[in-house]
Image (cartoon, rainbow, N blue to C red; front, side):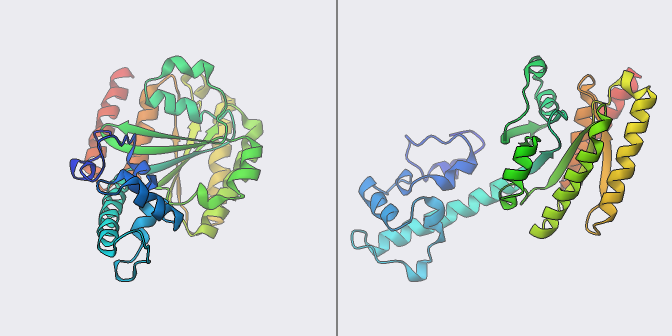
Length: 294
């Protein structure tokens, strides 16, 4: 088991049970628990109680009758599963779910690579296929990133077909736009509008941050970049104004200036964090760094 799973939680499981991350716990079969043998677990599974999550859903007051399992044993296992479920949910609440959305080749995966100091892989990165989930650490702050590949086939046939699988329970959406590809700004804007429509339908209200990707120092000096940046801000502010529930902010980033990406994540986490003082310290640190390099 990983170290971030507390010891009290570990004590409920058999020693041979390996868990890579806390999100896996509720998907384990019942016999992962100490005291639940394989035969009893198979009987539970045959009744549709296929994992710890399903075991925790049972009501202690009205347990199902399973001939091969004593009621008092089943009651005990249910109580343990419910305790584990509460603990897992509390731990997961500390992780902030961040959705990275945008068109393909917009720079989403490169931003995540820089955040993890994986500069060497950037040149060989291919467009994300479907969804890539990663567990990250930002100054000790736990993040779960969902990088949604931006190819049109995923947008139309996957995300918008089953939006509840992708757009729910997000703390913040980072909508990434390639500022050096002005021809695709209208397409990016339309995609953004569709995302907001889905959020309204799902009654979700995450924070929104528009990330102006590839805002490299040399590019920023050109008229093309300035026009592209102004066009993006105007278009996306107008779209956000169509929906009363959403307010958006903008951040410039460049993979050649790591501090811009770190500062962008700091701004994003400040929007959804209760530990604003910690995030303020990070912002001050990077402000000092930027001034020192100026």
